[in-house]
Image 1 (tube, one colour):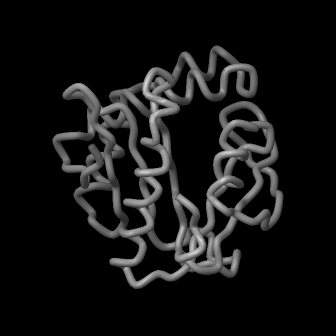
Image 2 (image 1 turned 45 degrees about the horizontal axis):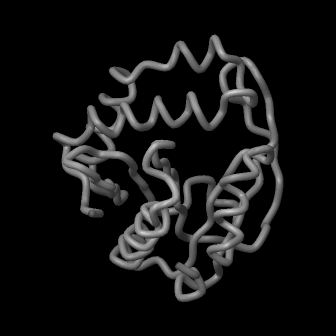
Image 3 (image 1 turned 90 degrees about the horizontal axis):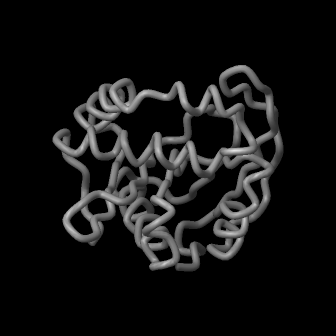
Length: 170
């Protein structure tokens, strides 16, 4: 089940966030950096984001617990030519391949529409081939590549865009 997140979900979202980073980015980011990530730190951040209300945050629940989340809102960089952005989408490894990612994207797109946005961009690490294939299956079109510094390393991230939210293929 997908639903809008509440502030009381922040701790669970943070646990999914940290766990997903550790599994998704293992081999892409230094292991000691990944191990240093703190669910407590992310929980405070998610509480602020959800309470602020300027973006939309959705959670995927399975067997009574949160197993994934997505967030989106106005494009942050102001230089991509897109107004909307899918900021993050993560689903625990154990809950993947069940359609939850697609349903989270569907909810995030609905949230962008609520904000009056008609298009969307998302950034993903260049070497995250699993996520890139997911966005390509959703109909995302490559936009550009740029460097990003995460912790102690600089990597490349690529963006995918949808000029019309109606073009997202669920």
